[in-house]
Image 1 (cartoon, one colour):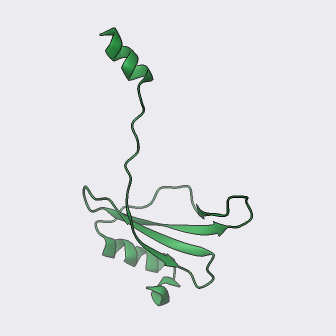
Image 2 (cartoon, one colour):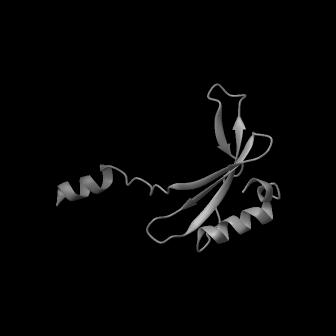
Length: 93
């Protein structure tokens, strides 16, 4: 019993679910992109906008917003929502 209590307090934390990226679309300027993803367990999809940060030592893609993504029932719905938000996607998809 004591072992179970200690394990629950100091055990290995659960890893967050990894959601695979299914499509990445780059803006014409090459400094922005939209990443689409879909959860395998239920097919729920979403997207996030990222920008290329070349000012830091790491030079990495960073999310524009720290808020979570909206959830859509499928990838087509996520793409339609992203196109409404980012007009440049119409020519890039």
